[in-house]
Image (tube, rainbow, N blue to C red; front, side, top):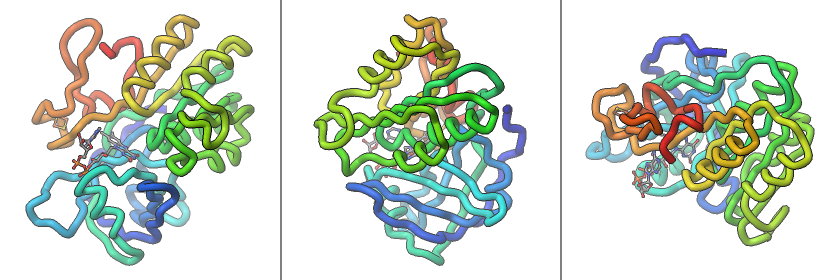
Length: 263
Ligand SMILES: Cc1cc2nc3c(=O)[nH]c(=O)nc-3n(C[C@H](O)[C@H](O)[C@H](O)COP(=O)(O)OP(=O)(O)OC[C@H]3O[C@@H](n4cnc5c(N)ncnc54)[C@H](O)[C@@H]3O)c2cc1C
Ligand code: FES
């Protein structure tokens, strides 16, 4: 599945925008044309109103779309000024969004896959897991968070009838105590996979990439970088490559072959 839709500016309005955890929000926005064009793993750049001095758009992945309703589901953490203002956008308010941006997951038919998410890396991983299930694959999902109140995605993963859903929290407040990589080591010892998809903190994805490489399993990682222009002109979002040089997260990514990235 390779995205082909051109990037455009669209209007959107907020259908709902609610806290689903500590500083974690779920927004459903209506933007019918864009909803029909987004492929799993792609992202969008949102203009958040409320501060004329803040012109940089916020890049966000999506967890799912409903093409019939024309809606897009986002899950985001409030980490700074832009996401704080985004969290204040109430139902009925609106702005503009640029998308669909980036390359998306490369998903086709195959064997069993493993989807590993950390924190608010869950939205694109849930979108990948859904696409994998729809392409006829068995998928196990590992979702990790620092604490129970920062976890999102368990219900969505269970609704996918993924074969196994394993939840980890760093402090043991829910699910298994420890990191997603420990759960991944256990699953790799029990089952054969031919693809791992991952998104989360960089240190976690580096560990996931290493485990996948040791097990000789292909691994795709959705990277997050600070972004300024969002269209390949500023180099803010550079990703260092193992072979040398850089690629841009906004144009060449955000999904990369994990073994090509210089973690
Ligand atoms: C392709 C892509 C998809 C993303 N998808 C999601 C998502 O689905 N859910 C979600 O919660 N977040 C996602 N992010 C991260 C999100 O874009 C940032 O958290 C947001 O832009 C921060 O804006 P701010 O104005 O609130 O914070 P700022 O005030 O700009 O920054 C606050 C802090 O966050 C750090 N930061 C800012 N932007 C990024 C970034 N892009 N990557 C890593 N650290 C950053 C800064 O270094 C700073 O420490 C994604 C980022 C990218 C590039
Ligand atoms: S954000 Fe400017 S090149 Fe990627």
